[in-house]
Image (tube, rainbow, N blue to C red; front, side, top):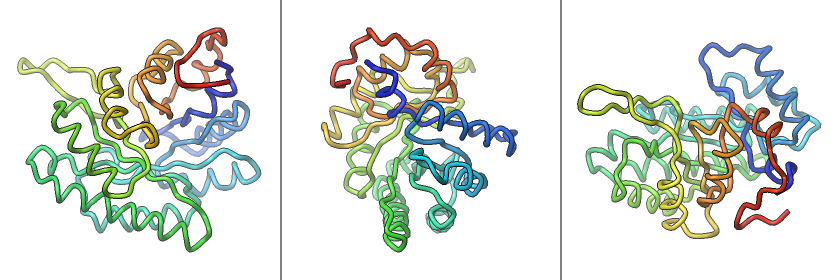
Length: 246
């Protein structure tokens, strides 16, 4: 699989709370160099990215309700509207995980639907198609919950389901930290549920080219990673990834 194809599937990500303008500018420069699908940044840096990426094909992705998803739908809608007006092309929103864990699935679905509607409406006003991805935080979900969440994300009009924020802290009963990122199992299940034409983004813990291959082979068609440059520098073009043509 050619490097150019891999790059077109990567969201080059920097969401650290300590990230400053210089780091964001470097992120954009790297994204232009490698021709990544997008940069993924916190909302405050969308205007910076808009300036840096003005004459490139790299999209601007930002996060909404991040990383907990535990703000009101109204807050998420306002944040989304501002982000699109500031230059965002893609919105990665965090599901209302508390509602999911409670079994209040209709509330979680409405939350997604209203954010999606706001994103698409704001985009239509400026003749831009806005992509909405729903972060499900799969490390907290069992297979049944994941199935339900994927189905209501599709019904709510989103464009992608996404595995993780990378900021979750799941623990075992004895207090040990558990994996918090994308897994082959979850990506495979997500792809099976949403079908071949819906987006699946794997993110969280994807630090190597081998891990990226695993996620793409499992059914992801977008990768979110803060290690995108390292992945590109170590990519073996002889590797065949099922489902992708060079």
